Length: 595
Image (cartoon, rainbow, N blue to C red):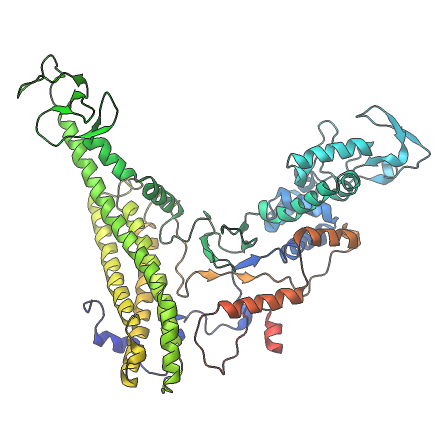
């Protein structure tokens, strides 16, 4: 391992014992003000789901001067993409925007009032019965039917899962019914369906939103993740689950989503082993079990007693000579069988090479995960020794760097299997170009692998039993190796993005960017402090608000903030001095300044 990192190189990375590891690792964010350090991903819990939805509703209501249910209908139609909705409004106008989403604003001044007196009698066009006027309901589109028919229509639609966009009963009318009317009529006969309807409306913010997805944890944590800027990212939920936001699988960079899906299927089905068995064995024509030939004679006998010809697989008798089988002839032996067997063996050897190293690093990562408890014990012993070195965050930072680089190394072998194979890019590169790129990538992979193993070796040292001078030496090695490993990971990602995938015509293979700090932990969602609650003019009353809050299970903002801070402090595993004040950086800047 000494070939990868020498003592001379250490002087290039480490200049002072007082220099912290964070200064080496996080040069891109240390000089930014707190207000600009906003996470690109946010966790939307059941408590904050309603607030997240209200922000988008408020923007649409203020711009278009519409009621809440009209704004919700527009946002559901445009998959909660506010920018796209505004773009359509600017390009095509309000009328085109409304008609495309099924929003109709009825002019009651021309067609009469929306309410009818109980003394009047009206005929319902659905049930063909005369009912009192106060039992008739007119929708925004102008169509009027009796409450019983409306209720039955709403009940059927909710049970069929169409509750987010219930259309009018009138023939060829695409208008969306007012959610307040739906809720009022259904709750009189089926309160359970009314609650289901409210829940579907709230959860539509996640189900129909391209920028928001449920956390794929099992069992489900109940959280959702919103990615505002980059949908091609890897994120960590507050429950600790790390996943790819694009394909919802576990975090897998530097593999693309398609590569990772193919690799998972290959490892799960063991398709290469099946391929080898298919080529090297023949099925017995009697019991249909695979039989492998272990001799030179082309007459093969299965354990069931059946004899058959190895060349054609046909059943034969037992009588044969050195050159032929009695009463059987299947023509000459073909060379393509030999070529097929050689290719299958070569493909199996190649798959075994990459899978063995992929699994080796995954196993090492699982074993090294036990180092967390060991490191805590070592640090506790060093703190009791009253050494001059007081800050031991370099140990946990080095451990986190080890875990991250192990993951990158492991997935890099799955990436290399498809990048330099013929499954995906057979026609994209010439054999010579493929070999050049393969050597370039493997050189970087080898350097990273050597330094990762050396970092692992230093972290496993019993440095809690060393003298102070030796502890300082271990500290220098771990800090420098962590910086080298981080730099090599960055170079590998740059090579993949620019030299390998960037030169291909096929643009579907994109990877999540590399982050020195590891996979980004999504920040807790907090509603804008200057946002106003939805007023009654927008269609939302206090009673409706309480029902929506009940459906989403929301709590007060104070409870959310306090529970979030407690959660962060419990999960934080870094070792800091007692003088350091811990603040949740996901809180608003003015809240941090006050504290």
